[in-house]
Length: 226
Ligand code: PRP
Ligand code: URA
Image 1 (cartoon, rainbow, N blue to C red):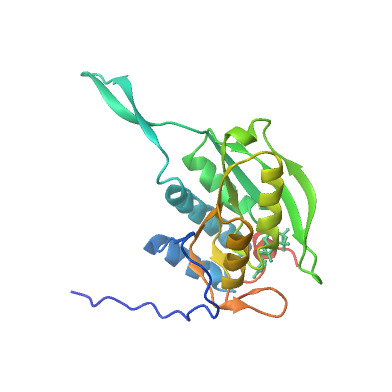
Image 2: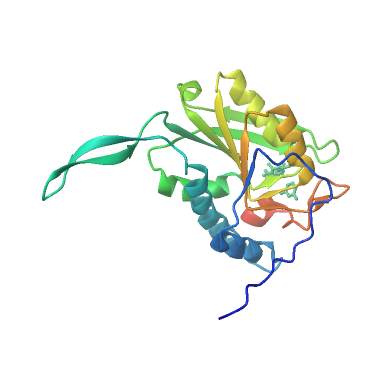
């Protein structure tokens, strides 16, 4: 039998409160993330992998959705079978890079509604600047899953969640691919009710607010911009 391989990853420098954080350590997610980190992966490959991981993360973030037993008639008999009950979903990608998760997530939950939240980071101040917001009219009655591959300073995530709460949303989850300990600490402090799902927690932020070792600029790598 093959000996288990130890994961050799540098530990995050800062310790953030982790009780709100779910690290999705499924081998498929980890393998695909490693492929995405590689700087030689193509734009097409990067987008495809983000889409695939989006589907796998959707599976994890919806794991505890409430179910109810409903009547169903199979070709052989009537039975009671489980069906998702309770609040309906809204997927809320933070533009641009959050869009990379969207198709994968919609493949799993095709009936979900979508809210688009347009934000970019001011490169000097790292503050989030809003340029677009459009959400379903009944967003306040739904469970909203905010998605963005990168949780760096968390300025974007906090601004997106502030905006949703201002619209009356009470039930919010946040999904990302990579998180910095600094971003987790800030998001958890600003919105302690919002649980976070991530594929990995990296070591730190650099002086420009980029996650290290990270994968670079997610939006640029997805769309081939600079
Ligand atoms: C990136 C990324 C996040 C944000 C994360 O977006 O996609 O939205 O930075 O950083 P933060 O946690 O420090 O806010 P960017 O502003 O580069 O915009 P883009 O997705 O349009 O490229
Ligand atoms: N945004 C990105 O795309 N990458 C980072 O490392 C930080 C913010």
